[in-house]
Image (cartoon, rainbow, N blue to C red):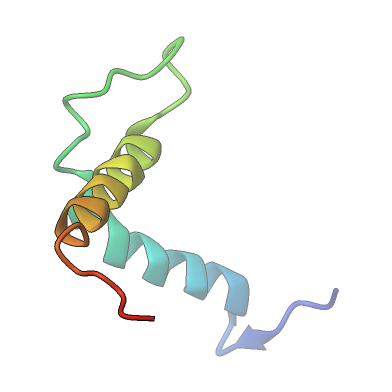
Amino acid sequence: MPLLVLDGYCYEVMLALIALQVTDPYLNLFRGLVPPLLGTIDFTPLFGFLILQFLAGTLDLGAEDEW
């Protein structure tokens, strides 16, 4: 797969930086709560995703489909 270069920056690197800027404020809420496994594996994204899934399920309990 050829790399798309825009103004000297790799397109994939730019997308990764945008993703970090969008997700880091949310994930930083949990960084101190979940210790890294063996000092290298960070489970913060998994924990953050589980919290979002729990909240989505909780908020969806009152809504019933009329199909």
